[in-house]
Length: 461
Image 1 (cartoon, rainbow, N blue to C red):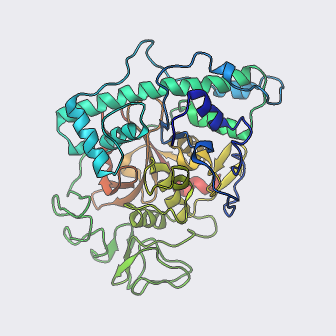
Image 2: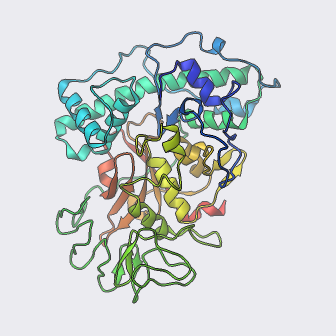
């Protein structure tokens, strides 16, 4: 994506100029079958913020930002409810542009290379630099304690830098509200996605260690593997322990979260639904999922988890092409954690919402902000799902949001895909791709805050 000035980014973000809305729907449109009439240029689409990151950060603050914005909306009375929603991030009055040591730059380059990012060196104004830092933060357990401290410190400095720019975005919309200009639904949703969260019930990290061990990719730690090796008979891959599987039970061929319409699997096929990429061992699927979720408004957490395990290391760009398209056609060059989790819970039966103020849906023209933006996802499901207070109470298919640096901006979204016999919780995620990693690894510092959602309650509101 070519670089643009902050003013241009805001214009692109809130669709205030002619042409920016071509081929794009407003936030209130949820027709999932709608296809764009023509390819939409990447620099005209509203993807400037995703998963807590602004796509391009200006080198210098723009003092006349508001003056550069056209104030041609319909004027009316100041909306007190919208005024209440306006909030700004706390940032130091003086702070320097983030810099990195040679040691940290080496880490960033390593993450960039492994994740196929085009990066020569660290530059905070480069989105791929910031993405590489976010990936390093997500992989913190792979580094020494000294390296961890340096990565966390840099992430905190980047958050401050980004939050200054977000405050500029918020100021533009705030001034419109103060001037009595009526906001579009899309502008309201953008404001909601930008401002700091109203913190809910914080998830207590009561399961900080794994008893029995786990792996990501097939290596063992204490005997348990992510791939099928047994630990006393229990596996995440299909081998049963007295008939019990990860997230479900086997009875001569019942799928792990994948049966539909009363159908059981026999070698991977279903009666009334097909498994998506699932292989079977005696009828138990590892990664299989039904297409379309459940019926009668019930959420199938196992189906959601199986979708996540199927797609944990790849992108379903054929069914969900929007983010690839607006990122220039790349395969996986955007922060994808929330889009990925939205796909998974959709497969588990979470219903679209398109009423004003409560948007969550996907379409190829433009998904709702809450579909792909972590901050918006949090705010949407805070209105819609019950909160979970303790890690031990998480179940398969539940979702957890993380604010790594505790600044009030959600950075990451993961889905629970495994709960072992000891009650340890494992999650699957994108951006930094992991399957069945211990949730404890994501509490990266003492400032980290997590918020969890009981997805079985989300269709009831």
